[in-house]
Amino acid sequence: MIEARGLTKRYGDVVAVDDVSFQIGKGEVVGFLGPNGAGKTTTMRMLTGFVPPTDGTAVIAGHDIFTDPIAARRAIGYLPETPPLYPEMTVESYVAYVAKINDVARGKRKPAVARALERCGLADVRRRVIGTLSKGYRQRVGLAQAIVHVPPVLILDEPTVGLDPIQVREIRQLISDLASPEQGESQHTVVLSTHILPEVEAICRRVILVNEGRKVIDKPLSELTAGGMTLDEVFVREIMKEAPAEQAAS
Amino acid sequence: MRHIADVAGRELRGLFVSPVAYGILSLFSVLAGIFFIVTLSAFSEWVLRLQQMQAIEALAQANLNDGMIAMFYQSMGVVLLFLIPGITMSLFASEKTNGTQELLLTSPLTIWDIVLGKFLAGAIFTTLLVAIVAAYPAVLWIYGNPGPELGKTISGLLGLLLVSWTYVSIGAFASSLTRSQVLAFLLTFVILLMMMFMPAIADLGVAGTSEARDFFRYLSADVHLDQLVRGLVDTKDLAYFAVMIGTFLVFTKTAVESVRWR
Ligand SMILES: Nc1ncnc2c1ncn2[C@@H]1O[C@H](COP(=O)(O)OP(=O)(O)O)[C@@H](O)[C@H]1O
Ligand SMILES: [Mg+2]
Image (tube, rainbow over all chains, first blue to last red; front, side, top):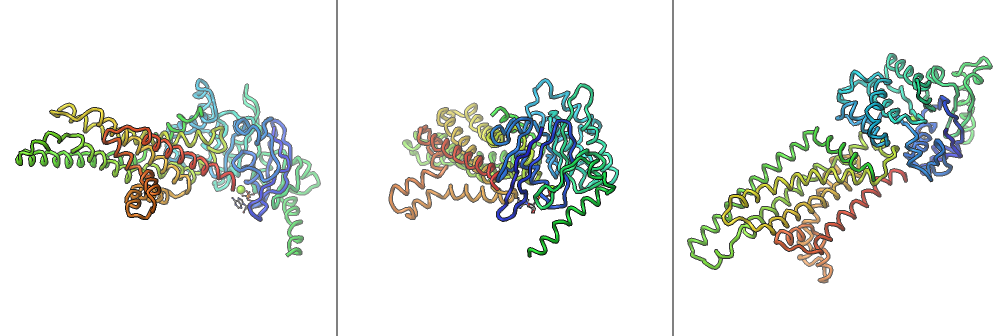
């Protein structure tokens, strides 16, 4: 469903993402894990077509991001780090607008919007103006916007950052639900970035760990913790591996 | 290109829930009323004076179009210059501060969908402004005896329309360069003022050769508006507006696209 081939992004001398490759199959739920500044956002921005890779490419649902960008973008539902909302719009009209620009056919728009609002627990606030909503609800609107056109691929960049513990639980539950198919609906392939370990344990079945722009681990969660180590210990060990080498260099 | 109307529709609805749009509409209507009354009373005073002086020949030549409507249109052109930056400043800058730029650029929209949609929204709004202007000569046409000349009146309105769309394309470009609406407003305003003073700069002799002077004059929107207000519909003037709008839309497209180069 998602294939990254040697994705690389340089900003001047800074190498934000360094030759990252992976393959994610249909229906997988993958945690994209790494400390702040590891290159998670940059990788997701390359997959979603917001920034072009300096090197490498990606194929989304069979569409190359360079040669077939519009179809690739249509196949993705994307929740950026900050939910991209128009504060003056109502929840419903906003989600309907996103459905429109994602080529949801006119006749299917109304039910698609209603279903997205329903799944994200927004049915009661659909007439509210987005600017008046709490942070947790805005995050839900961000999710509703990402799923409204039923994309095969969902890319979520730190979907629980800045929420209170109750909201975090609700959003995690929501994402878990999205990852499992509803009646008559195909399953989303989900990539979710985070630096919060319990989040990965709660939602994902596979972990891709990145550090300083490079992929360091790509394994099923069960395999990672099979040796009796917690994910926390694995994470710290892998991140620390790099640190001494760096000190020696400088 | 299929989504231009979607983008324009959202933009217009956004504009009309903000107080800015209503503020500008009311201010514009009030100013139009004031300039209409001022130019109209100046014209009737002048006619009265001519009658007292029994200047038969001058009286025969005095008409509403040249004596009043031309001045009214030109004043409204200046008002547009002050107000349009307030409409266009948010077009692209607010997408950056909302983070919705990332939504648009990762959706199946093309850059032209976005740029033309935004331009269309701005152009529809200024068409509304020009419609307000049109109401005044319409009043003269209904009640005036003799009323204004239809051809000149309409070609002048066409001029204002083209001027306003040109200003929108320049404002859209400025807004695409920055995330600050204040900066977008100021930049648009400075560019429009510079355009307005082009003929003055040309006449100061800065321009040297007469070709250069003609070129500077050609850049000014006012010069072309003038021709249309006088009822002279020339392809040279119409081409000016088409070229300006096209150029600034291409600039805007390049600026929006450039997010991807960084
Ligand atoms: N637009 C940019 N210009 C310059 N450097 C950038 C830009 N975006 C990200 N970076 C750098 O790239 C690295 C990875 O950033 P990011 O992908 O945001 O990490 P993460 O999302 O994992 O926290 C950081 O060192 C960051 O400073
Ligand atoms: Mg990030």
